[in-house]
Length: 313
Ligand code: NDP
Image (cartoon, rainbow, N blue to C red; front, side, top):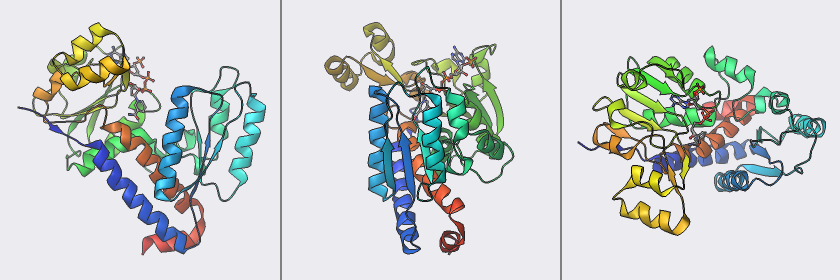
């Protein structure tokens, strides 16, 4: 048996198309959703992510602006910037690219974002909305996981779901979304006993760990759906062998770039699972698509009746 590969790139482009047409419809009501991205300092990985987000905004017609304060900014000055963005009506979403430099009080800064503009869904008010099933802004990556399941017609209600990872950004909100979708949910972490045994109960297994290829064949019930959130750069040749021996295409990338992107799920799982998201090309593309979707949602929720009436038509 070989798992059905769930194509995140194609699902993400469907979502972007839907967002673009919603943005077009909002323009008729005189509203253009706007996203402000705050990137402190010069972290090369963060710069790549931010470029991707700004480009995605352009493609779907969302206004975007970038703020790039210097690496040595203080918490107080950064808070002024956030307050200013909170006040500006044409800004619907505020995204603060993490990590922030050590002298900045990250929690204070994230909590200063107006919950109505918190397109990352990290503010405790949005966390509360999610856990009480009220309309709010949901973190992009877990929201993307649910979109993949829904759009691939994978039944969630009544299914046994296991989430490995309990971070505030991925594991916990993913578990909450699955509970809200009526799955029976177990959350695992580094202290879980018999991890493989617990994972083997899952009809839907979500891996959000940050350890390349940790989920092996014996963790997976035959036929289960496996969603791999992990994004790990593999640079060691031994590690590469453990994961991708015999994969000529990967080998070429690894040889030329000196690294390759691996998920938390070992490729051998494709022989047992019923459906599986690849890395790259699985959950990753959904994260930006859901950011676009959240920005439009934030605009709709915040900018009054004109847009609400329009979008209900
Ligand atoms: P964190 O490091 O915040 O959380 C990792 C979780 O995995 C923790 O709960 C930890 O347990 C658990 N864990 C670590 N080791 C083990 C183990 N040996 N057995 C069981 N559980 C373990 O990571 P994130 O949630 O931020 O990210 C997880 C992965 O998802 C990373 O690879 C990250 O790069 C990727 N990611 C991908 C995104 C995308 O767009 N596709 C977006 C965000 C993240 P404990 O709490 O006990 O320490």
